[in-house]
Length: 412
Ligand SMILES: Cc1cc2nc3c(=O)[nH]c(=O)nc-3n(C[C@H](O)[C@H](O)[C@H](O)COP(=O)(O)OP(=O)(O)OC[C@H]3O[C@@H](n4cnc5c(N)ncnc54)[C@H](O)[C@@H]3O)c2cc1C
Image 1 (cartoon, rainbow, N blue to C red):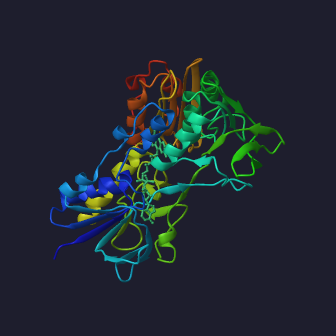
Image 2 (image 1 turned 90 degrees about the vertical axis):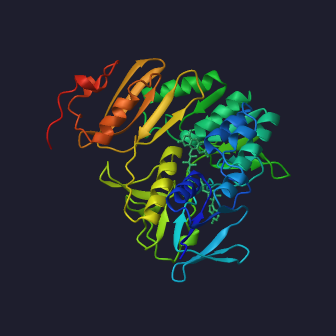
Image 3 (image 1 turned 45 degrees about the horizontal axis):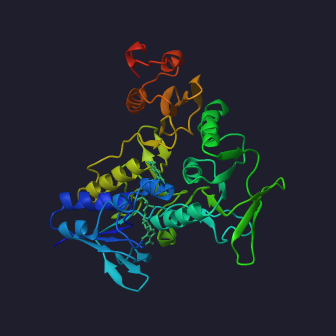
């Protein structure tokens, strides 16, 4: 009998799963369902579109013919509202019921809204979809002042969009540095200077107490907890993601701030897999459950899930992720889990060059490189090899780091 595979979500995790499934199971029925109105596009590049630096066309990755050529049924604008694990069916918003033999949940997340007054006002933007990018672009092209909230990797995209569009922006941060869980103040200062250079002023010890609106309900200002008021034509909020797991409520699929999967992307329920941003996966490098919101990781998880859906436990997710920022004159890369660990080492080499490594039990578990990315492959390899190097921090921080300068690895 022909096996049927249903994938919920056509982001990079779902789409890469469909591609691998077709390779591994040439005769299977494969259906991909997405509530977005367009097939897979490059989420990483929507910021370049909003900056006005890229037209729409190159951001699309697959058009509908990609699915037709692979005999994959694509359902656009279709929201899955229910999963029945007993009956092996899913139900769409139009009450259509589809059967599956194996199910992949790759539904990603939805940006978290600030829990403050008027956070849903006109002109307060969140940033996840191409549609969001279109709205942000429109606001950025017509406005003059903006407020950005969320001192992380997506917040800085919004700041860079403001900069590129010539907006006078205030970047409101609760702490005293951008991405303070991964960088020290010294490292973050490089990013603050780069923001100022493009007209985005970081404001520390701030945040949003509430937004003000005009009579039409359009945002006019953000007021921070100190009572300081920042006028704006629009605001960009990037304070985190809520995983799209409502459809799993009451199904018995285990969650722990994300869908729990093993290294095979299998949930605790037979024939149900999950991949991408919404997973809390068993990380074989860390030896514990972890999370990762990055394109490469989601793509690999989709592919690993697909292999295991066809041939259970045949493939394992073992991955060091990377996330780069290309908004400024210098390169920036974070890898692995830079916010985890029980130890760290860092060094600032110049006004535009900095490195920090996060270590756990003496092993590298993540890091941030600014200015010079040359050592990234060596650090990532050491992480993947789980090599104990925490006792050789001076060597790790050498400007021209050479892993051959490390003392030979000890048998463990
Ligand atoms: C602006 C921006 C910039 C980024 N920049 C980088 C970067 O530089 N580098 C990097 O590595 N990563 C970056 N990321 C993160 C990266 O894009 C994500 O990690 C990745 O796209 C996650 O893919 P996913 O398939 O898990 O989830 P998603 O891409 O979120 O896809 C999930 C899909 O499922 C759909 N869906 C949800 N619920 C349902 C339902 N019930 N029924 C039907 N469909 C549903 C959603 O609409 C969505 O289309 C960026 C993200 C954004 C938003």
